Image 1: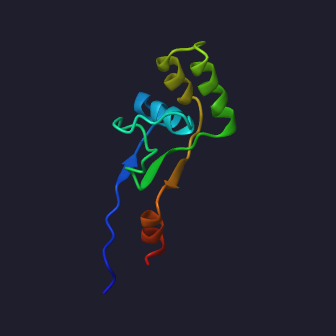
Image 2: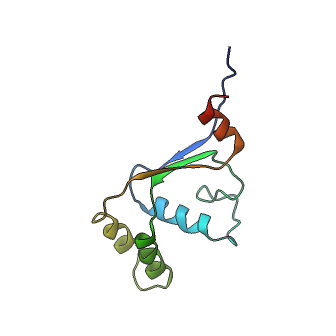
Amino acid sequence: MAERVVINIKKFDRPSEKWAKSILNNRDRNYKCLDNKECNADNKYDLVIGPVVADDIIILFRTFVNGLIDINILIKEFTYKELTDQYFFHTEKALKYLKGV
């Protein structure tokens, strides 16, 4: 009988303020606020599922980071994009689950 693997999953169903902050925090290599639920530098989530941040979307994030738009405008702009989900496997444990090993 195969061993059951339990993994911690963070799922974002749609763009939201938490989703945006999670992306910004996890792309910033200097962001190490491990107590923050939106920080995954410590791999508290084995698998993160949510809308893809493609190259054209990154421009919106830069506009936000540079203070040219606020978080509400950032999120609103995503309603005009057709987004697909991505699955980001952060740990070996998550990969084992994927493989069924």
